Length: 319
Length: 302
View 1 (cartoon, one colour):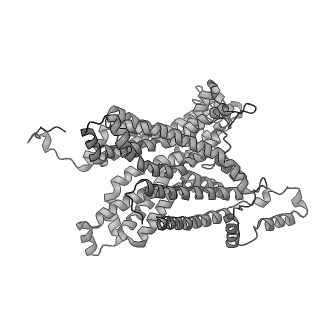
View 2 (cartoon, each protein chain N blue to C red):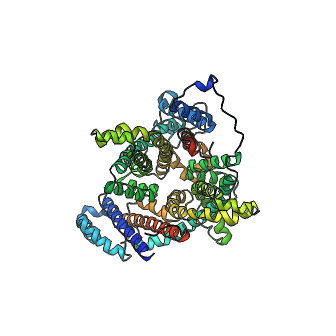
View 3 (cartoon, each protein chain N blue to C red):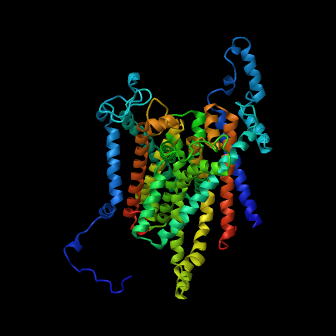
């Protein structure tokens, strides 16, 4: 097991280095000079060029790209991601304060998706090839076909603007902060985000359960007189849910993609909103920081998927 | 499971009709009502987009500040936007660019995936290893987030959009083609071709691509669906098709403003419905094709 973990960690580290080079080269090769954005046009009339040069040196932009990369990597590995061009605050701090809202949104969405998908997947498996099964399949295709941001806008139109039952923006109402208020703000974006991944989950639960229902041990349990409910809950479902563990881990980065878009719709102050607004302002250190965060998240989720699969299913040979 | 299965009728006239695999697939496809409806919707959407200049009476970019934010009327079927441009004309012209981006990106992705998958399966060794590991890495990343960063850094343009989508959608077809190639590699007719000196490129062109085409077309529909959705999401964020050119996604960009959402639903409902309808139709056609091409792998959607 230790060798397996070490091997996986080594692969992840190599992939991370490869990706960090890609991110860095790309950002440095980008058009647009972030320094010029920080200069008041009036300053460039007399001695402004010197100010720009000084700022360039200060930010290390006058060094060759490989040197910039190595210097940056050394800093990045110690948690120093530089300073935001816009707010002059440390990038790590800027990212860190945007992380909890996104984690809250993604975590809730994941939970809702499982609560929706497991029963529906079970129902589809038990009633396979009936009208119920076909309807659930059509429903899950529909949910992945409608753009989440369009669904979000439509929900805001109906629930906020026409019926006035739910808030449409932010995480809380100023002056009314409380658990109930937070839940009212969270429910709509989380529900819509959950729909982007519930469809695939339904399919996995359904096909996993169908495989198990055809297995010999299920027939044995039925022959011994176990009720359908007991066969499902005690025998087939636990085995069917094993592959779902890895599917969930692998889907988390894709949940972030949905969050990036939906945070824009619901003015949710998370990582996605930060990334999109930083791009608008050419705030390169924050963009690099965000890209690195995504890379780390993807690698951790993949590592977790590999390890969890080995842990929950003893049949998997660790090599 | 009926034990007393009826013996097949021996020599009725119908049983002697021979049908090619393609005809059989077409019959199976026709039996799937949702797929047939989806195909009809797609044809309509494609026609509306192709014939946009002849259907819409207004120019999609003609600004008329005396007629801005007008509700739907006989003159402007879907109203006008903040610059007084005709929404109906913009919707149809947007369909051109959205479908163009979706299809071109998918064709590029599928072509790349097919060549890489065939090479990986045929050659094996480190090429196989490199292609498949790259596919794993690309698939692990949420394409939208990476394209957001890419488009944000390089600057949004249709070229960046198409290339970036293609760069993230090739692994699906690569995996399928590799699997087909591996199953073909040891077959006698491929060995025979190889023994008389056929080149790799010849094997791929003459034997692997024809055999891989049906499953590739099926996963290709999924690629088209996600490419259209990616275009919409990125343009919605302002990182896809740049204005003044209209796309379904950037028409929805206006709807980030609550006042517009509340008072002018004609601005955001039509492009949203167009995307949803198109992607839904593509997905239903894909399901139908899967059942038609490989009846053993029946999916529940039907």
